[in-house]
Amino acid sequence: MQKPSVAELRPVVHPLGVKDRRSGEHWAGRLYMREISLRVDRHLVNTRVTPNQLTYLMTVAGVLAAPALLVPGIPGAVLGVVMVQLYLLLDCVDGEIARWKKQYSMSGVYLDRVGAYLCDAAVLVGLGLRAADLWGGGRINWLWAFLGTLAALGAVLIKAETDLVGVARHQQGLPPVKEAASEPRSSGMALARKAAAALKFHRLILGIEASLLILLLAVLDAARGDLFFTRLGTAVLAGIALLQTLLHLVSILVSSRLR
Image 1 (cartoon, helix red, strand yellow):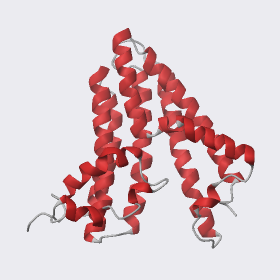
Image 2: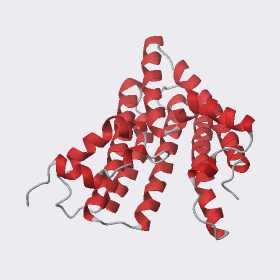
Image 3: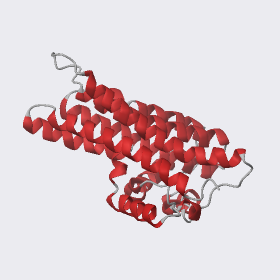
Image 4: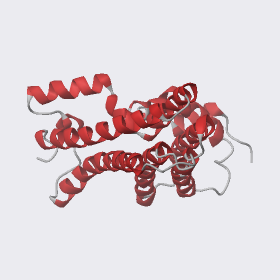
């Protein structure tokens, strides 16, 4: 069977608005990965590969970022970025194949969210273990592993706080939340939210951004000859995760999403 062209695939797998979703599309997807995924789709749409199989593979790729980051030096950081980029690619491809084949399922949506949780957590846990210097030959400092795990916990809790809004509304018999309801009711909180959105510091604890930051830290460490920057980054990301977990919870409570 002849493979469809990119031009044939695009209107089906990239329907109007898919790249403009406020919280459903990552900047890297809009910038480059959606174009790469179209080229991959061509080779998969006429096969027996299912969207859920791709989602499982996506999750494995994301989780493998953690052991990849245990490889010392720049090579490990590069490998971590590669695994996260593979995760992102498959995250695009699974939904696109589902649209083309019209194979939609609740389990696919659920598995996609699980994969997102695990990828973010894996990168941050991997960062903490990397900072602990498991293979350095000296005494392992488990404080850094703890801080990395703390950052991972924060990243997971932030996603859970968002997802649990839907759970709470469903249990109360309410319809899904609208975008307008996410706006804080107090002017002070609205201003703080706009400032955070402008700075985007909270994105550093997401798997894609964190993996790129880890690579930058590895380059700086290589120039310095120790793990100073990786450890500094671990502490900073743990602090961001804890602060963002609290601020995100407050922003939900003062918005109309639970009303």
